[in-house]
Image 1 (tube, rainbow, N blue to C red):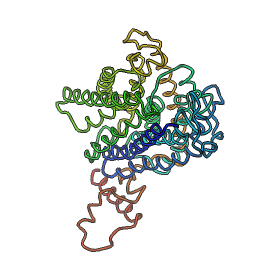
Image 2: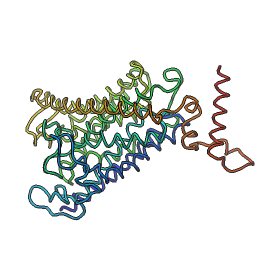
Image 3: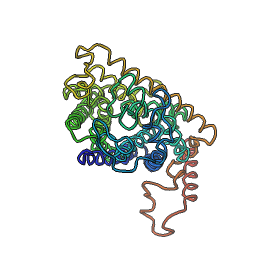
Image 4: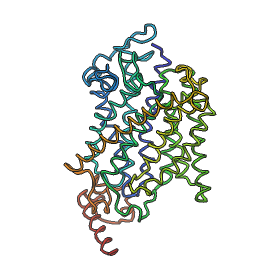
Length: 461
């Protein structure tokens, strides 16, 4: 055991956990005022539910011994983390796999991977903002994590000999490089977001009514917390306080900065303004793109990966208007497109001077290495995209047809915060009240909001 490595991984896990409240602020500021609490609750709900499922069987499904040719692991091998409690011993190249992973306790690794599962689920919620009921969202989150995220995490993150003897097919079979989750997290969540956006359909007034962010300072704060926590996300994936963690930290910083510059430059040239929303979105685009490539490129390569990501994602957010799908908060444009670019960029910019390039002993296409690594990256990315999209579409459709996933049109006009949570983020009316009860009941608040919505609709008619 190495106490420095253990401390770094535990701190990194805490940083990544902070990213989900950061995402809640980022998403919450981007929606309209009547939807902000629901948007944030979807992230916090994922934190609550996935943390429990991860301990019960999720970790076992992701990092247990493979039982199906690199595709699946048993949910029962480490059920309830059975067999993983204890300090463990370090012996040679690998730790005692019953209680440790490399030089850290197994439970430190459990903690670190748990927060990856949490934020992946939370990311999907941005695609269905303003119109997804909270109860069905929680049901979807549990099912999706079980049949999509946990198996995909096994494909990508479970290396032979780390926790168990045999791991996943992407990590060990085709040797695709995904250091911190371009496929398992971002392509996975982006494809799922696209599928759910298609299942739930467009928001009322999409493409016609203005749906501007209601609070840009919240968006900027959320983006800042995401950038801060992402150093744990990427550099923590080294699982050690070593030179690779430092290399990844620098690449994460510079790629993110370059992506923000790329997004803002495109905005300025195209629209005449560099916006705060564009700056915050550029930050996230850069973080997404560098995630799979952060151990495989040089700092100069990271600048190129980030800058191109900023431009590509800024262009990609308009795809929803061109193709007619309502991806509310641009999960597809930023996470799916950014994740695809970052994953494929490994095959282009992989350098033997980087830590991953040195281990794999190869170069990317732009460094004279041909397309050998590029096809591996493409296969891994494509497999995750198709698997996530198809299963998410099926899960979402079944929930919609049975318990009802989408809010009714009347309730959508009223506001999902009032209908689903009987609360309002900004209760301006009570500020000027001089008499009467301090707070209305949830049912009366919702009824009043519905009546006001009907009156508004009648006036428009």
